[in-house]
Each structure stands twice: as structure tokens, then as C-alpha cells.
Image 1 (cartoon, rainbow, N blue to C red):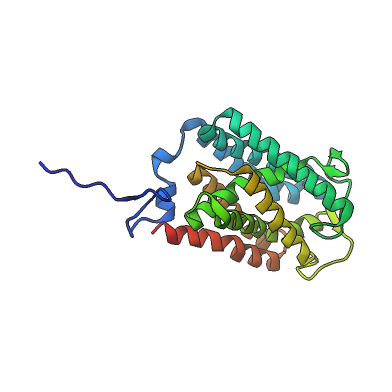
Image 2: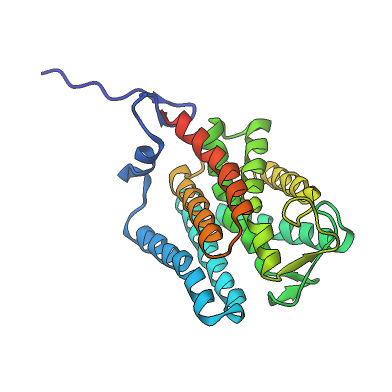
Length: 273
């Protein structure tokens, strides 16, 4: 009896070569998910994301900073758990320390000198702080940089090289199209001079892209667990869009962020065909 031939696999990017395969089907393949504890952590993260606007609406502005802090901590833990499953504890710890250390240094230089983001300063809302930089900020970079790596890999089909670095930097910067206007409205930081993008200077996004490219080039994140990290990217994209449209009355950033991050979701979907 002849066996049915298995689908051809594109070894270059690990995606099935069949034109009928969709990105979400690829993400949902059971072999790409480590199991029950993983799913519990994902479920907890989703609950925190969904609860964030509701808690702020019920308890008011005073609940904003604690709720955002919990969200960043939970998502950082989720991303580190995903990386540890694929990389092991040592490599994950080294990468996390590199990202946190470099981003704190970049934020310290940026808030002190105005480079590479433009003139801004952190308020006292987010605590604790080191060098007038909230310690939560490097963790926020950590929680989204690996998902940006996954989006870059799936959209570009490459794990290394200048194109991967460029795509990673742009995917991360697309997330900031959502974040910066929202965080400024919440009073987490202020700009010396309002800019063209809903009060944010355009130089800020160049600084994000440059910083993301530098960290990606130094981290060299090979063998990414792309499916769960891309899931984080997609869920963040969708919930940020809905949150800014429905709860925060930021339709402009919602539309721009939807298009910016959505471009990478579409490119990954297109490559998944």
C-alpha cells in the first residue's frame, strides 16, 4: 500500500510550501506549542490584557500605572518562558540581560541628551526608577522585541542578515505607533516640544528603529520559537487597535498602529501560503 506523500517543507523558513496553508493554521499546529503550562500562562496574559481597560475605567487614573506594570511583567514572563523552552535558561538569561541593559542605557542617554529619540523626560508616575528611567521601560522593550523578531522572520523568511535586522527594527517601531501617544496621554513621559505624529516627534520613530536594529544585531536571535511569539505579536496588534478605538479615544494612533503592525502580519500570512 502506497503512503500518501507528506507536504513539502521549505527548509529555508520552516513554513509548509503548500499554497493552501494559512499563517493561522501554521501557528495552530500542535507540535509548535510546548503544552499545558504554556497554555495557562497564555491564558493568564490574555486575561490581564482584557482586564486592563476595564480596571482603569472602574478605578480611574490612579489604577493606570499599577495595571500597566502588571501587564508588562506578565507579558515579559510569557516571552521569557517561550524563549526558555526553545533556547534554554542560560541563553535566555544572557539575551534578556543584554536587552534590558542596553535599553536602559539607550533610554538614559535619550532622556538625558535628546538622542536618538528627541527631547523627552519621564514623570514620577512609573516607579521605581534608576537614573530617572523607570525600570519598567526596559522590560517593555523585552516583552515586544522577541515578538518583533518572530514577525520579521515570518514576514521576511530570513533568520539572519541585514534584512532580518531591518524588518525586526521596523516591526518593533510599528508597535510604538500605538504606544507613544497612549503613554503620553497617561502622563508616563512628556516631550519638550510636541511633534507631528499626534504630539510625538518623528525623530522618536527613527530612534526606535535605530535602537531596535542595534539590539537585534547584537543579540543575533537564531532558532526563534516563531509560532508562539508571533501569536503574542498578533494579539497585541488586535487588542491595541480595539483598546485605542473603543476605550482610549485615540482613533488616529489606532489606525496607524493597525496598518503598521498589520503590514507584518499580512507579510507573514502571505509567506505562509
